[in-house]
Amino acid sequence: MDCIFCKIIEGHIPAEKVYEDDFFIAILDINPVNKGHLLVLPKKHSENIFDLDEPELSQVMVVIKKLSKILMDTLNAEGINIIQNNCKAAGQIIFHSHFHIIPRYTGDGIKIGTVHGKYNEGEIKDFANRIREGIRK
Ligand code: 5GP
Ligand code: ZN
Image (cartoon, rainbow, N blue to C red; front, side, top):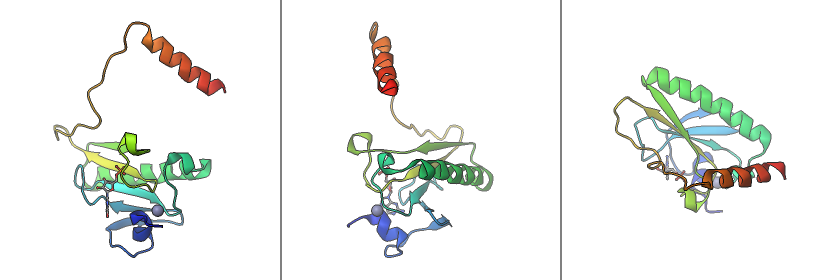
């Protein structure tokens, strides 16, 4: 399989690894949104969040919280964005599940996502009902 993150995990491609346990590694993103931007990668290859099981998902959040606190303390970050892109339409470019931890500073000018929009008349209820129906299934 031609997966750049698997190659990093296996040590075939260099990366600045800052954390490792039995299930995850964290590396510095090579093109950071802000300096110190981390990527948390499950060691076992999976493409996106839909391939991760419940234990993996709960474990990864514990790692993310721990590393977020470390960025707050060591880089004097004033805030943290946790981002996870799934599928091409959502901006995923590396198809090995990963979580972004981005240190943020007041006035750093970084815009995550886009400008928020508005619903047309009645549309918010329609979306809510479609999602509620999906949850009941
Ligand atoms: P996404 O798939 O969620 O859009 O983001 C992939 C992220 O991986 C990007 O932020 C990109 O800068 C980072 N990235 C891509 N290739 C490499 C690499 O070879 N090494 C490291 N450390 N990061 C990478
Ligand atoms: Zn992989």
